[in-house]
Figure 1 (spheres, one colour):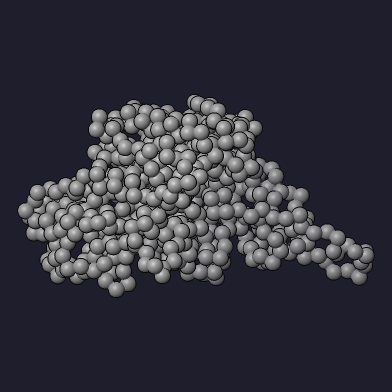
Figure 2 (cartoon, rainbow, N blue to C red):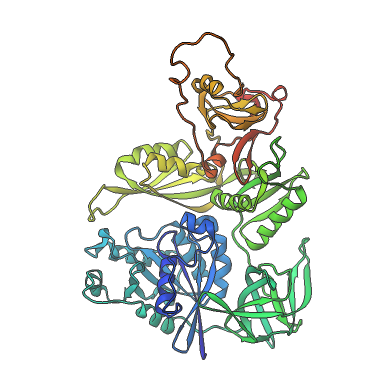
Length: 624
């Protein structure tokens, strides 16, 4: 092997990064003839495949002739921007994917800005050129112009702004640099491939640079784990080379922030070959290495040999905007559906997550069995909660808290730009929905309707981060599932005032037992129920949403008194109208400051922080 190229593929969510990597692997001969290629093979996690999004950055490689191309697939959702920020130091070039119909979106701006700041050579791939909206080519040219304007706006150098343009259909596995060749490729009159993209990488992406230090140096950009050799550090070799069984040093920091050096022996070395990690005895400058031998690797550590080689600056990401309290489960049903973990084990699990994900932060709280986790958005918290739930843990979480700042003695809060793509008929309803949450409409743009169908518009709304909590599900309901919803953190701005959260109160069980259909029938007129009959409840557990703003303590376990008088058909003519089933994200939106979300492997429940009814008020003004 004579040469190496290190690239990453960056884009907004759902613009086709992972699908493009699938076809790059296929056409580079990664799969043997007898192997069945899986769609979105890089989305290996269960949650990634279920939700259809990339959550963690992952490495792979392909070979083109004598050149090895290391490829990093990155997330496209704004909540996982920390994955993009820390991974860009491993590469020398980037492919920016933009949807040919949607054009540059919020995360496109974020990832491009980070790549340009790193000084990377970025080329533009206009994907999905076969979409109906792009059939006359006019929209594709508009998107290219928008991308160029974005490069200039973000301060690209003259060299960076002179990017190459590739027109692609990742789903079909072809691309071209000739705009006029697109119609024939779409019509399958000519057969296409991804060869132009491979050639462009070899021609435009520079070879790995070296720090010219007299020894080995590597910055840990990612962490993995093997059942056989333990913790694995992943990163690019910045100088020198490393051999198996060689003595190396980990330059990290202690919990109190002081520098810490730790010596260890390199037990295993791996490099990426396609989708596998191939074991090797020696690796040199420029390659991306997977290294084992120390159980204390953390993202941001520098591995060196000899120990006189200095440490690199630690990886930093943008600061969190939200916090959430994680607590030990203290409900009466604790331990019945999963592992009721103690505070020590909950603390260890959260610290482990923070070490893997530099966009999350961990803080102790005033209470010994509660901990604060700081992050970017509610989706990031929802993913962490779901992962812990699937690991068998039982715990509780509170309402997300926005992190405020005091600037010049004035309270400031994080602001985000929401970019909405929706049918025009829903625009006024959606605008009203966001204005109720202190949103300010800054742009209204009619979309090109050459592809037929409903006329669509694009709205840009500046809104406080707290106004976005739970907004995704409400927006999708308002647009009948036809709207696209994207956000991007902007800046801290002066506090916008109080926001309406939940106008309704809660229906709260006043005793322990099982719900009975007869009792629930009498409660239906009071509000919306969350559970049907035969469900275990306890005092303080929320069983529904009250139609009024105050809470109401109710008895869902009341059985019908037995008498010897019956009316024909009375028992089976009355049935429950139905219950409201909520997702984890909807629970996070619904919960109030005086309530917990109880998470178990089998159930998600809501409860009051104070369970005894005689110790809490039902008046909204007194409880929130």
